[in-house]
Length: 534
Image (cartoon, rainbow, N blue to C red):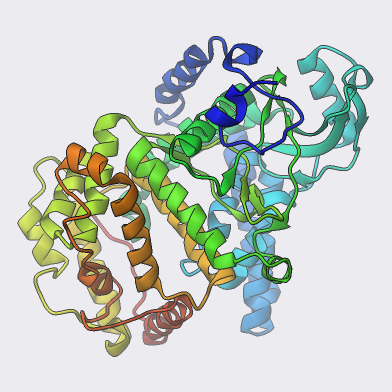
């Protein structure tokens, strides 16, 4: 039994085994493996004259067929049936296309408030309800990677999987030595298909620049590069095991006791198989079950948010793939955080720029925040910050979009997007994964605490950082949160609220979003594609 286990890592109090750094056999050489995955990216994402014809044709056929089927049938039966039918057909098409598209579906499933509710609900099935591989296929992968027949390693191994998602599926099992575990098994042919999908995306991405507002702002080629980097690392479960240890170490160093990382097995981790400690609990959206068990769902949400922000701002490492299938709430109220294939890592320069961005926003220092965006690479080095202040109307009184016409809203958004693109606006990797995480939290608030006062919650989180990290923040970026009061003016302005607004619940925010969306839709103005030449 090792003292190092729980003193070094944020694991459960009593596990099936205890880890020491020296006992983990699969850690050797992993930095070289991670570097090799990164070195492969430029060639994979290099635009070619033609995409992988067969794979591109499959994608076009599946997605086009889904839309055609909806057009011929579902759309004729009323708005509700139409929306549900299109969402279901798209989800089925993504599932047929495999891992890369399922991963995109998981991103959609975390975007409540940004995507239609029907689409979000349908794509939730991409988290852990993807059709699984046959058990004979699972046996073949496990035996090939672990080098022994299944029965020599496991006393029992459930033929039915617990969950099945984009890259892998997980099975409940018991080792011959008696420990209860979960076994993550990679789907066969995933690596080959992912590389073909990346090549197809790299071919089409440059053609999307300037065509549609969201794609233009997101920088499609950079998005493909990010997708390639993250998913290539996910194809090696040894790297995921290392991510588990690193985040568990950060959580323990930060004193976070509300988040639990399952222990990876010290020996049974390979490129395609990951054996880990089995933890149990409530699904994060089982609000009633948690409340019946006396769990404070608002505190659960607060703990997750603080650990996420702390990892990014203070330590430069955070979970990059938060969604409902990747976590559950244990009976004692702690959150078991799963699936570390997509983990964000920032160097010191990036992390300090990110920290400055967050703290400048908290102080309503608009200029400081824009400078931090520029340091992060979200703006060109020669971006005109004064022009951006004027473009975003940060120096003008706030206009409430619920009091504007749909045409006015659409015109203003289009103007802002064009202006941002002229300044080279884009989302670099840390901001992309941070934004993805915040999409999850936006949906989680709707599930766990819809009546939470968002202004009061931001104040509580700010107080946490002022109490726990003031000296570190002051030393690194020259802003002391103990000496600088939180100024919510900027946050309120971003939501279209005047400075004297005293509170806002997520339920009220959703109502505002719906009202604004309906205004734009009813006006017929829409958000047309943008031409960079205009």
